[in-house]
Length: 218
Image (cartoon, rainbow, N blue to C red; front, side):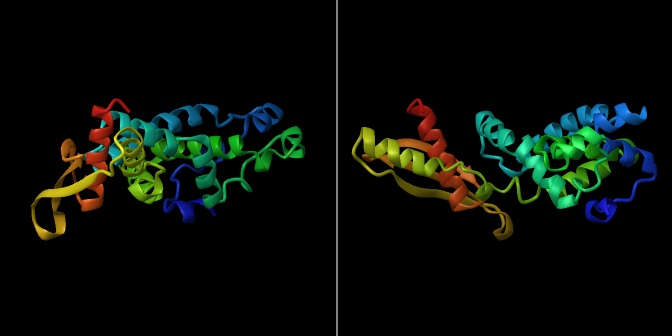
């Protein structure tokens, strides 16, 4: 059942029922659809994922965070979470929508996931909803999950424009062992191209590469 996979049991089961009610079913049986909950859930997910990304990647610029959020907060991604939670088999569909493959339709599953988050917020409040979203999206906001390799891009630009490979150097390491902050510089042809900070050498090198790309106009 959805509540087991979600890690939360609704106090008001009718909210969960509505979250799983497609407009085609609502039109046939004169009951509320999940469209209003979908609207609410979409806004909540955008906000909560933004907070998670902001906290997870302190060295990322506004532009970096916006690009990543666009990848995470997407219909295709939400449909994957819907599949993981088994929502597709539980969505209430009208006969026409059911007969045309609506249960497997990505948009229906993504909308149901958004509606589920909206329903969860109404039933449990912001804190519990954020807890659930944080758990579900924990892997999605990790840096390694993004096609976001600034070092590779900088190397391509540097070799194409200057005929040189960027060189990285750690300038400092600060903080306790379990929470180190690294500062790194990147040079091209011995000239300082950019600097960056991060919780690991890899993160700080990526940050320095982004800084260099920005200064080079990329």
